[in-house]
Length: 565
Ligand SMILES: [Zn+2]
Image 1: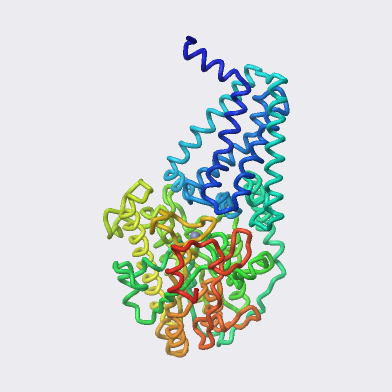
Image 2: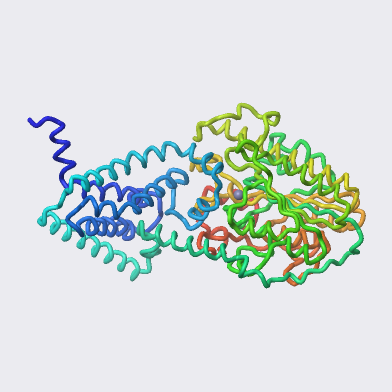
């Protein structure tokens, strides 16, 4: 009997074994996607046959198998990324937004997330690192594949590819859902990557494509009167965990005491990603008009045209996105400074507001705040003294740690409550007509049901990722000057709202601005307010009814409580 060392040596020296091994490990994402995606069976078989055949043909294209294996390195990287995303979201091919999220995330945000993906990362390293090492070994040893073996693989490879293409053609002819660039991995992942590169180019060109845009905005009020308006973009704050929504825990001890505050309990975001939701919240754009985003400017420009001194204060780092460009349109753009490499807490924004209130030179001010809210890791979003619900410290990310995760999430909401209430206190000091509008960009999954989903920005949304916290507050002076507005806000507080349509239009109404871009029927401060149908902006930037967004039956009952589902 051969010693084990010799057996291993003969296996790793056999180029045939290397080819079979590479084809097998590269098919792991295909097998997983066949299990997670609801696609017709013909496409599922094609999703195995076509890539298996193509990999074989590539690997035997030259007799030096090691070199040919290395040409598939980009596919190994994509496969590893795909496996990690399947671990995270439990479904879907790498979406366009996934690539853009990676491009727009900052280092601390990425490392917070990566720490919690450790099992998936260890798994992909364990699969692909030995594969790469084996290929390098084949290169160093100059291993060559015999002609007979190459011929055999060529026959197998071309037969499998043709068989898969045939199945796809039959599926297309039968009108079955899908296409080669939707259902075959890695073709779909590469297609989405190209689309993401395209969009990144458009974003980079935004300052040039939008330069001529004007809101033609004008103020309907006396220009000498002092007014301060604060427009707050929240982060990952879902309505269900707000006491103002009826949550059983005291997460809003301060805001629940405010008398001129209105909470909109049926607000459904049109996107579950920050990089699409925030630009919509900050402009006249919504899901149906998203493709015009390169040709418009933000609400800051509208206010500037109408004579306001504009400010953009952000507790999220600039990240080469529309949000950064929009923020640059303000007269005064500032980002919070990191303390010893850590993102500051949102209360850093209170001091900036306080300084703005002290500025009596600029009579009319419009301030946009971009908060960090309740973004994962929740425990890093609030200081020690706001650790109210305990235990709230866990490094584990799993359904078994849900209690700690919910405690820390609720503490972050309680801290948001403190930040908004403190900003309102600053506005009260200003002693002038003032108002605050707030909406979160999207919600979050926190292992809420049997699906055990976590985080947001998944390729298909859930109810938990879309139902967001949204509110308005008006000062006493403002209510005295415009009593109908607080009345209208209260009247509209239980109606279905799209924050992407109503934040902009409500702000225009409250600030007394007229522009051809505004629509009073979408202003919550107007008696003319009418709810729009619930829509969702897909990965490919199409506006579709929420019920066609890929949501599952587990979401239906919750959504039906918000709008006519
Ligand atoms: Zn976000």
